[in-house]
Length: 138
Image (cartoon, rainbow, N blue to C red; front, side, top):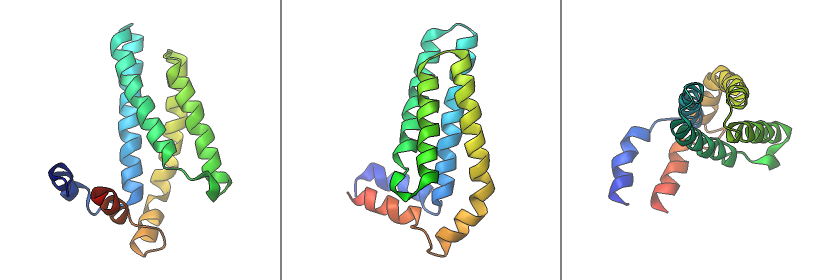
């Protein structure tokens, strides 16, 4: 195992998938809010840097969705696509629209967190630890 991955491992072990997803949402929303604040201050350089990072994070959220699993995942992808295109506009209304969408999705995920954790812990869905373990050895 690569030493850097070994260093990271203890901090992540024990987190469930839903915890990891919610952490991504938290960081995405933080970057978007920072970008929005910079736009409102007319600091284009700071806004672009924060919003570029937010775009990467939104793309990461979308990459974790399997559209073959039904209509719900496809709807998530549509919403991520909308959020991504709205953030790319680098305008106050665009970022605000994306924030509303992602905050709503985050609220829904927070609501299902206990059930999702239970399903993962009972083995009904694949463990995040197993997923990270396969990545760390790759």
